[in-house]
Length: 359
Image 1 (cartoon, one colour):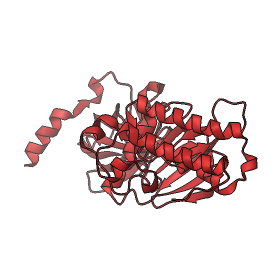
Image 2 (tube, one colour):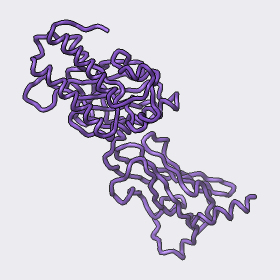
Image 3 (cartoon, one colour):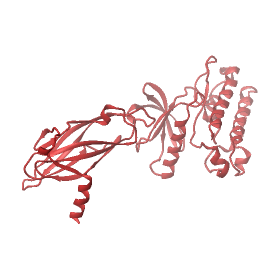
Image 4 (tube, one colour):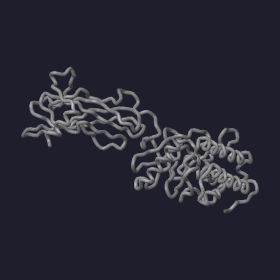
């Protein structure tokens, strides 16, 4: 069995005599040779996030006795993973082995770390040594964020599935939505990934800006533009009528309609249109956008829903739902429009007739 395994390994492993090679080796001491004292990932070019890259390094044995050699990361790193081929190998004196390093960087970041070359002589002494070489690289910009770049400042809200903080990301004031118990459920993980994928597609001035998300366990969150004035619901609950000029009240509704129109023109149904999901970014009357649509955890492709999607338990807010949704019929674009019309009615009765509409 061992002989068979050895033959299989030889098919995928390159071992060669050092004196018969034109590779220039550097001594790391204790009989360990290498052709690189540092590994520059992708030769200094930007690395794609969450995609495996391959690097090569040769490790040689300058001693007379055989040596067992293994390459390992210094310690487990949450931002990248590394595996090698071969994982561990015995190299005779005067020979070297070509190692393949397969690296996946999991977020937008700069890597500056060390990897360990662990060796053990196969003689009576069985001397074990550890040498290190540096590994460096920088990824492209992506929406998979480095958690170390996100700074929480204070908690501003909490719901059944997430806690919201205001904070900072690359000098931008942001809302940080930390997800609850995502790691505990595969369904929740899939829902989180769907929401992030949806957000990543949206680039419109009437949609809240999406900076990115953290996928690292125990740090999972979504980072978006911060709306200083909260939601339209906050405005209704906390502000006097005289504080909001008539022109701005109307502008909120126009901006909201434009946000919904953008989604629908891209084949997306929101499914949870309500005052809490329209965020007020400004009360000035001389700027283009005052209100933006947010929260796409329930959003879905319209074509899919027209064929097989009916009411989903826990999705949407009943008092804003269209009759066909409550009757377990298929979702349509008009379902979002109905929900928005209820908001307009609620808004008009409060801000124009000084009456809070209750459901």
